[in-house]
Structures are given as C-alpha cells and as structure tokens.
Length: 314
Image 1 (tube, rainbow, N blue to C red):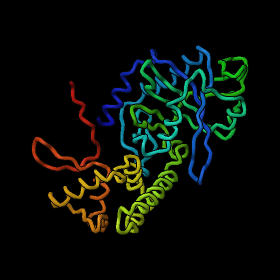
Image 2: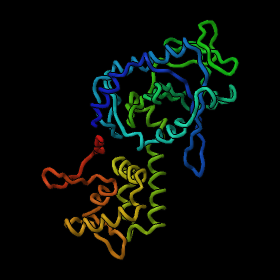
Image 3: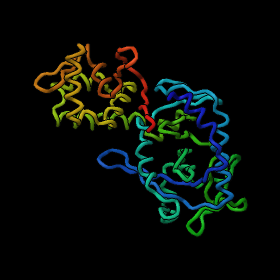
Image 4: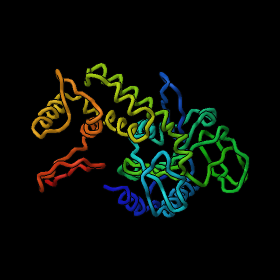
C-alpha cells in the first residue's frame, strides 16, 4: 500500500468514535542504546475530547505526503513526510506501548511526568490502537500559561483539564502521527531529535555488523560498513534487514543461493558465505530486504521499494 493510500485511510477515520488516552515516554540508555519506558496518565472525559480534536485537526489539514529524506525541508502546512516506523526508534516505543493497559499501567507519580521525553495521544477502538499522535517535550514540562496550550492539573494520580490551574501544559500540536506501521511527520526537526534518528540508525547498523560477523554471513563486511557509514538511505536499508531477520534463517539463505545460481544474479557465495563487492552490494541489500520479487504474470523479476503480502480468502 502506498503512503498516499495510507494517508487517505487515515483521513477517512472517524476520530470522534475512538477512545483517547494519554501516555508518557521516558528514555534511558542501556549499552549506549536508547531504551523506552511508557506509562499511561489517567485523564478525564473533557481532556479526551480535546486530545482527539488535536489529532483530528492535523489529519484534516494533511493533504499531501512525500517520503522523508534527511535533506528534505520542513513540511508545508498541508504536507507531511512519511517514513516506515520500523526504520526509526518509534517501533521500540510502540513495542513498549502495545502490551500496556490504560487502566492499569499508569505512572507512579509526578516525578515520572517531569522525567518524560515525550507524550502520546493514543487513539483506539475495540480492535486496538488505530493511530498515535506523538509530541516531543521541552526539557522542562512545567510550562507557564501561554497561547495555544491546554492547562492541566495533576492530582490524584491523573490529569484533569482545568482552566483555573496551570501545572502542566499540553501543546495544541503534535510532531508526528503513527498509522498502520507508518509515521506521518509534521515537524522534521522534532522527528529527528525525538527519534534519535541518525544516532539510532548508526547504533542499529553496528548491532547488525556484530550479528552478521558472529554468524559469518559475509567473507568481509568492510565494504558494507564503509558504504553505509552514516548515509541515511543505506542506514534505512540496514534497519529493514535487521528488523526482518532473514539473514539468520538458513532456509532463506539456501533458497537465495539456489536462485542466484539458477537466475544468474550477481550474488556470489564462497564456502557458504556471501561475497560483497562494489558491483553487487546493492543487490545483496535488496534481497536481504526481501525486495526482489517474481511476477507470475510476466515471468519477470523486479526490485521493488515496497511490497504488500497477498492475503488469500478462504
């Protein structure tokens, strides 16, 4: 499914029918890699309605979508950038969010709010989470009253939407919206800061290098490391490869070897190890992303940017 189609689907959602919850995100480092703890903050009905309205307005105002690139400008008012959530730190935030119960998995106290890195407006129906609005927090979340901010009072271990008091404030904007494994980015600057984008991708690539060295997947990975470096396009490919994990599947690799021989692909094996060179590096990355596909209709092979698994009825 294209990003444009997903945006149309998102715009077709009746946000008013979804339940809105508020969750805060705390970041901490483990082995120099960002980890995330997510907890819900109980809120009242009035605030739920206002949070739904924040996300709904952004969705209504977003009419065009272009794929995110590192050197792209900030999106225009009616524009969003798109990126697969799996290629960012958001997929780990979402993994931490998924098993939580909004009623039970709540913050311990006000200190946890102060330490938060971001908050999420979580929209769900009876089938689960449908969309998430994500907002990066300033260093000090205890903001003074200002135009465009919703004043909240934290009391009794929950947020209440009160006009009279002003302890914490929620912005009338979000920085990105998650829908169906895709991030729609409204603020490029906030996205890159909040998702530790480049740092996270480099750390992820280093983990992949360690794993493929341990299983001796390639005869030499120095060219791969050199080509990837901190290049956003290659870092995204590497992130996809590690997320899929096909390189750890002996059946997949055996099939790759057989097809490469039969079809004359440029992928070369020596003693059960793949050989990377200048000519075949992109091909190797493509097949490890499982993006070299065969058409039963024309009996041709294609390298694709996106692929959707066919779901058969019955």
